[in-house]
Amino acid sequence: MQQTIKPTESEMEILNILWELGPATVRDVHEKLALTKDAGYTTTLKLMQIMLEKQLVTRDASTKTHVYTAAVSQHNTRGQIVQRMIENVFNGSAMQLVMQALGNHPASADELAQIRQYLDSKTTK
Amino acid sequence: MQQTIKPTESEMEILNILWELGPATVRDVHEKLALTKDAGYTTTLKLMQIMLEKQLVTRDASTKTHVYTAAVSQHNTRGQIVQRMIENVFNGSAMQLVMQALGNHPASADELAQIRQYLDSKTTK
DNA sequence: TTTGCTCTACGAATATATTCGTAATCAAAT
DNA sequence: ATTTGATTACGAATATATTCGTAGAGCAAA
Image (cartoon, rainbow over all chains, first blue to last red; front, side):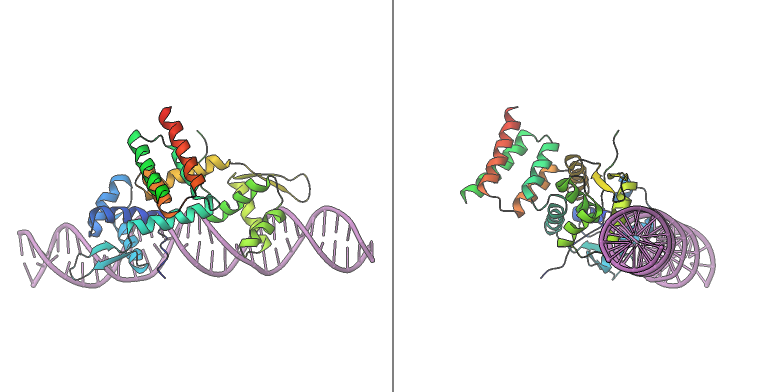
């Protein structure tokens, strides 16, 4: 079995940045985070140290300035979070989640076409 | 503006039960909860009292045994939770959430048809 | 009335999440 | 070598979530 991935809200923000940047220093992450969030540098540092303990990230400590890398994949992480939400919020119905998401967000024609294509590939399979 | 609805995981379990049962006592809720979760009666009671403070529920205290009712709608609650998840986990892309949910859950032909119908109604609109 | 059962109120213990200050360390610039 | 600035380690304060024990009130049966 694989590990359970359950990042907190703050940890999720950092994972998003690491997925985008690839390997990055605390400074890198903090600067990106500071664009949308008001937090001190040591707060970001501490969070990333905790994420290391939880094995959400790995780090290269061979130089003074450590380099962090996401240790969990975006797809797997998103999958687990969505799964929990389906169970906890939507009584186990993935379809109800999909309908809710579609209902609240007017999708573009392109996006709708993309979903249709996806549905087709599932049906014919 | 309306209130922000942000139930915790435990609170969500109770809301699900209240939405299903309608007005119910702590005992009612607890018995349903006990089917899937191992918690003491006073734990359930305390949770529902906290939910009252947060105005997630209302209660009728005119009799000794109080009767609780959900004070937030299922649709609105689900919408807000999905919205937050889209922002925090999917970088603001509702479509990516939809794709993830569809990808992880083999849907039945009926469900796929339901989604198709929904997409059609949006496209032609 | 007394006993026994159910209910609510409430405090407290525990766990987890978030934030930040301070001290120590290291390296580069002077 | 000394100073300056950046970095890490770590403890601590605070907030929130979760759990449950105990006390007291209400009510009905004996």
